[in-house]
Image 1 (cartoon, chains in turn green, purple):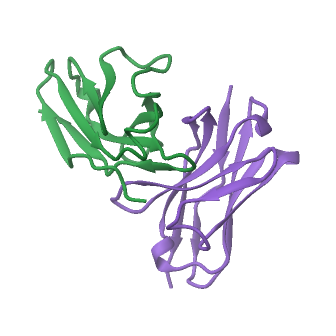
Image 2 (cartoon, chains in turn brown, purple; image 1 turned 60 degrees about the vertical axis):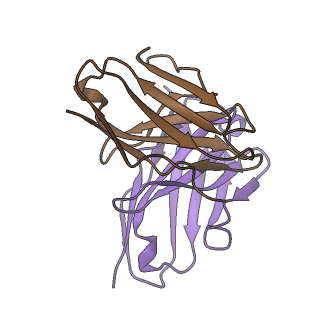
Length: 109
Length: 117
């Protein structure tokens, strides 16, 4: 069971948008509507930002949005703010287990 | 308030055993699966395994099968992650998380485990 593939890093200036990809297979990302995205600051627990591909938990800014095309899911952060600088991980249900992505460090220039 | 509170940091020697805990509060403990996640220093997140506290149904990710044991005590709303013989490579931060359907929305604060001779 391999980790989902994410780019190691992404960056943007304040106010710009950044999109992070998460590539899996038809057995995970492409096979179930259960892709989630987590934000993690150094030394802190992950925080759920997107679930079921496109849904936002209460309290998560609407600047964060999720989408999917085939076996690749994406997280877009619009109107980048300094506090968005963090690590982001995707996760997908695989039918019996879950698998994380490799993680992407987002930098705000 | 719904929360998961994990046990404190541990420093152990190779070969020793260890059991860390994750206590749920503010919700019905048996209504939600609990997962354990490993994060090695400077590395990404890894799902280790998942347990249904209602019936002890437990599933392990292939990399962790046979390496750790996940259990729970429903009477005290607590889940456990256990090693019988620690290795230096078990040095990591360990998180527990609570399911909301197929999503994991509530996380513990993490437990640092250091294994060193």
